[in-house]
Length: 396
Length: 101
Image 1 (cartoon, one colour):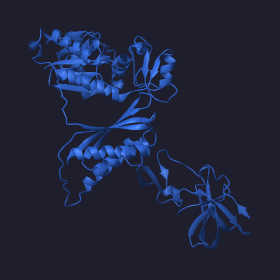
Image 2 (tube, chains in turn purple, cyan; image 1 turned 90 degrees about the horizontal axis):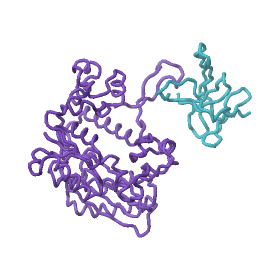
Image 3 (cartoon, chains in turn brown, purple; image 1 turned 30 degrees about the vertical axis):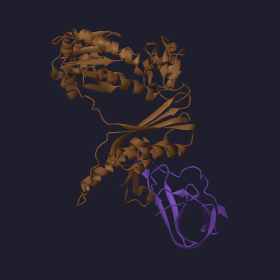
Image 4 (cartoon, one colour; image 1 turned 180 degrees about the vertical axis):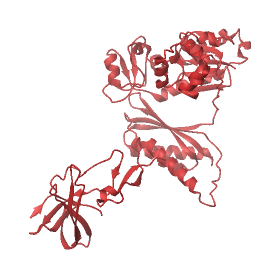
């Protein structure tokens, strides 16, 4: 299937630069100020050239690039711009897959017939995106998502790179294996084996790669030869509803935010008319032009606004909002018809254990550390009480 | 005579195994002792409680092969408010602890 990959590298940095053109050409690091113990969310190519990488501590980024401009992240702004980018792409093809901020794939099969070839299609996409969002994308068109992405990565912003059908392996050959979607450990091992280009990898037979890397080895071998059967997963257009409340004066207390959430959820509940929502997004416009957002996915679709409020309350109580809130928005999505809950006639032990395991995993994900323990016998024969039993982390 | 918990601020832990949190660990305790060294009062939650009677006494000597051997004299007490309590005197470290037994 012909697939077009539309890529805006360093998307958050590109959005910030569009907002403030004075930042153009200057190294930019996004992720609060360097005195905070946080990580880099994104950086501009200038900062990247000096060794700054997403995920590294901000202090390290400052040490590497002292002249960089440090900006706080604006997640809502980035997702808004990305959403408008997807809408533009959907005007070209109804099948658009969003993967990460700044990267999307669309089904380009048969589209070229409506234009003067694939190059023209890519150029029109770039032009439309520039008009709608002010951002410059690179476009790669090829068979399969991986080759299309490799084509987009290797092309300059504002350029289109098309790989004719059957020429995938030839196109990939000189490229570095670090482009492959492999774990850092696998990439390190490939380097140790002297496998640095796609050509090196593709020239091997799959057997030794499977022996060394298991299933991942065969998948990488196929990708290096331009064989990518991963299907396009178009995003589903979902009904979404949102309500916004602007505070007369910026709110700082959790109580004030909870009251606002209560009002918003009551309004949304009325609009839901008995239906249930699977996801809730809480967005806050903060004092000083900053923003904050948090997406919550419910275990099962929720129709009861009080239950939603209970969950939101917990989130707000634990969220360290970096500034007072000027405006609060709640969005509900994944809206479904409410379904009756089927209770089991007989309690199933396995089901209960599964539920327990799920709860433990959720608690661990929520708090970042194990919270549930299991009592084990250590030396039950010991005369010293503290030797007999101990607590170990509960592993579901 | 009042014998304090000694190094009460330091957790009382003889031996720990990574990843395991022992249950029923001894907790340092302030104990007033009589002439024979028996507990006559304890301080619990900042409150001094007299010992109504000593219900049992036993001694455990163990792990003499380890660097820190164990030698404890246990007392099962009944406090003036009716509460039962097990305490011991660590004869090696010379300190008092309470412990669920």
